[in-house]
Length: 341
Image 1 (cartoon, rainbow, N blue to C red):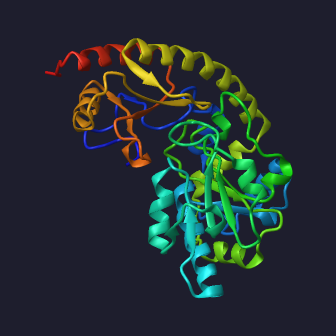
Image 2 (image 1 turned 90 degrees about the horizontal axis):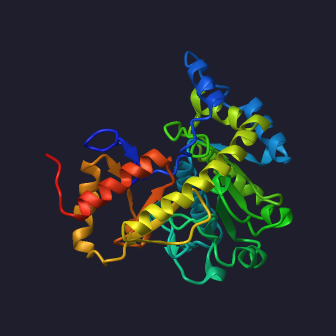
């Protein structure tokens, strides 16, 4: 399950999503408010595609717009499965990181892809850097890309690249040109309610696969607001603003890690604007839902990492100091077994 609103409404403090706590980006917010929702967008997204291609310095033919990152995850999984079945008649295989966004596996099952632990056997490989939920580098990414064979497709999910607070992607420009790069700027812009994404296809992309990916898209995957968000994103001003945000988030992250550690939580290393943490006292998995529910009663929603293969852990977005102070109080109350009246 994703974070955000639930049966109890919108959390007062939603740490379960990785939105930029410095956001929203003001020009993007104004663009959304001014978006013309009376008309369909251009079904080919001509101007947007040209803008995104120019921003990245690639040919417009390599840009694929998507309704969201999750929508593209489903689409590329189906495309690879159909492509492989058409060539060999057998089910294709998919390789996933040990801890990863659950939609990769969900889409693979829906597409009929079989899991494999051997990268050389996979038609589709997934990478995410910084990773989710841990916010760490994808281990051996450069080596995986270098070993790609002609029939293999590797998708690099860069949902958290704009909010990387330390380090750098371990791929040079030529290596990046060999993979499908999935970008979802709504987190970086602090506007996760707008679902919009795009992909940069490999330089030497398999033409039939690219055609199939395009053919599998619904009509108008982006509405007027998605177009406005991506147009705001592909600008110098937006990335200057992000530079300033990252400096602020680094300071906030240091403080938040200290808050969690002082409250008796172990914090895992992370390069991004979020961390994975768990109580040092070894809270049993059976008691874990009650702890999260207690925090939710106090207005805090954390992301349960069970779906990532990390039961008993939570992912928390970096938030402003005032929210951190309230979190510390809530952690103390919940740990003491207090309840909300």
